[in-house]
Image (cartoon, rainbow, N blue to C red; front, top):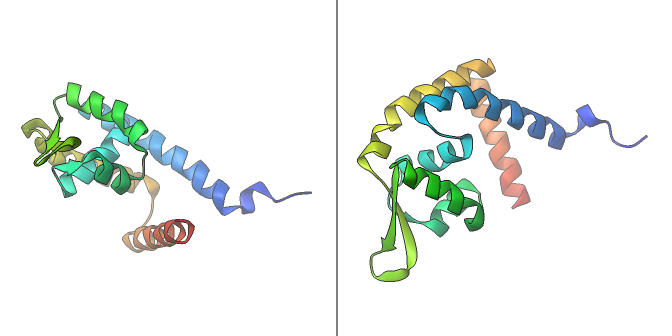
Length: 139
């Protein structure tokens, strides 16, 4: 009766997401980052000095969820929170020298986490494409 749990895409994504996040936990400890903070840092390593709104959109989190994450990153001296040039109402998030220097170590973390999945490069590419397709269709 009802849908079968293990036949549902939503359950497959949900349960896998939890395991991926758990796998990152120990890898990120030396960087003093949680997985959501790591996601924010990855976005900033790709594009630095952005508004909170732009950053929130990029990582798929609400601005209210972002606030405590950004405060913690600022306490770690990984980011600066200032104002956008020409607009004193919008916060600008930028990397500090320490935050920038973490990129190389973070790249190693991402590679270790990927290796732990057992996926080949082609399987990884296909999975990312499929996840992006689902996000695109649902947004």
